[in-house]
Image 1 (cartoon, rainbow, N blue to C red):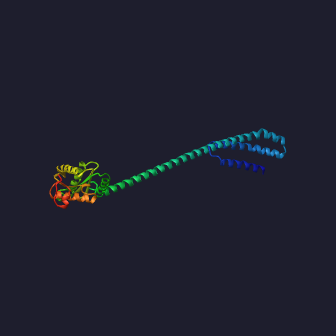
Image 2: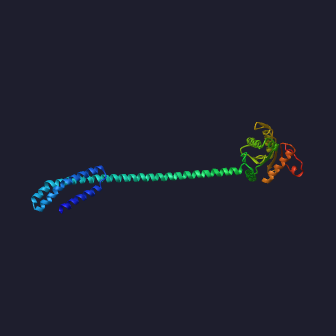
Image 3: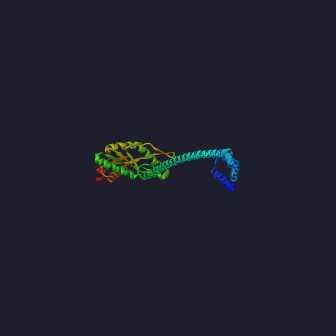
Length: 313
């Protein structure tokens, strides 16, 4: 019974030890421990048998010379195994700490990238929305065919000049311009040629004015020029310059087309103090110029009260 219990202890210890083995070095040490325990087990059994027989002197000698040295060898191997597993545990701990640091740095990097990406997306969306808003604003305030300011933007700039004129007593002038024979050209040569003519007229007008001035298309073949800090006398001189701009023919779809203009001039504050009055009086002057087949007229009270046209030149 003692022998079976002893064998069970050896077997149990060896089995439990095997469960802890993971590396090749540990397996080699375990193999050495197995060999030593197998080699030692008969000596231990013999010592036990001698003890049962009462041979104490022989038992002690056997233990001293054979059992103890072999047990020391087993203890040394177990110590090696413990040291190896301690080193392995330290290595595993170091690896775990290193992995944790790497994981933490990676998470920090991913977090930073997420912030950067989120910011980039936000900036992209804001720019996209801003560009769309600008495009919509531009479409709302500009003529689609010529890209000139439309009636809405012209009225806004005219109101701004009136407010500035009221504060600083600064004059400005409005020149309303209408193309002669546009309907004939549009009907005979086609709407495409008519559109080309309107685009070319807008280019010539923009070249003729200063950067501070405004050229707008009010609709159809009707254009308007808003001259900042320009009196009625100066506006007349500018109208003469515009007449020269239309003296050369337009080359449209391989054809030369002569186009004349009729212009009406009104000035702030001489001819009005509000948008409606200034535009209406420029319109009156323009239609009188057209009726008299003159290139331009400047509005005067004589046109309104006496019906007599006065050529401003």
